Amino acid sequence: ETGVTQTPRHLVMGMTNKKSLKCEQHLGHNAMYWYKQSAKKPLELMFVYSLEERVENNSVPSRFSPECPNSSHLFLHLHTLQPEDSALYLCASSQGAASSEAFFGQGTRLTVV
Amino acid sequence: AQSVTQPDIHITVSEGASLELRCNYSYGATPYLFWYVQSPGQGLQLLLKYFSGDTLVQGIKGFEAEFKRSQSSFNLRKPSVHWSDAAEYFCAVAPGGRRALTFGSGTRLQVQP
Image 1 (cartoon, rainbow over the protein chains, first blue to last red):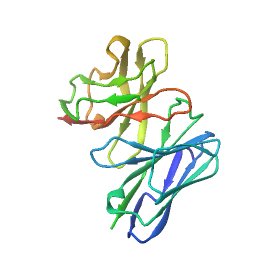
Image 2: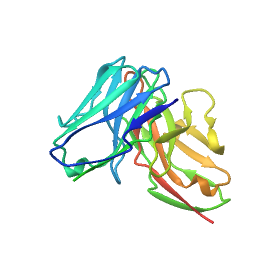
Image 3: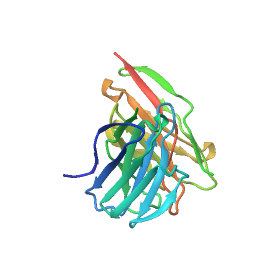
């Protein structure tokens, strides 16, 4: 398998649930990202990991908790979400976090009910 | 802070017609510049990128873009649009250093038969 793979593709969760989004990249990259894409809004960068260290966190609410156990895997742990958190969550990777082109997964469509 | 503006939210062109999507950026130096395309329900695919050198860059699927420093623009063009080009197009900039991409709000392209 190649590229960036995200699972699940679709997720419906209640506001009291806990769930996790998974991202795996097979490109040998050393930087990974989470983006949030809401309707009629620009893509919002949530987290950046470079060499498994979080290097950027754009004031994301604590109900979103990232985890990067190694350079190939990235998780986004979700708990007590709000309906406005419903969005497409995109994972990306690049070789270096310094202005490199990013390769994106297909996203997880999250609906909070 | 850097920013990216895509002035056109929605564009409709006829199949076979030429296309130009506008992108303007605001940044103190020349950033790295990218165009991505997103089909419905999918992640983002890189069309082309500009780092330095020739200001006219060629990308995949017959797209090209021209960097104009004096206008702080990086417009995307295609001489003859195909129905399969209908999608959302995002311009992005990367300012260098350990910083991730900043995206414009996107332009949705509709192609009429």
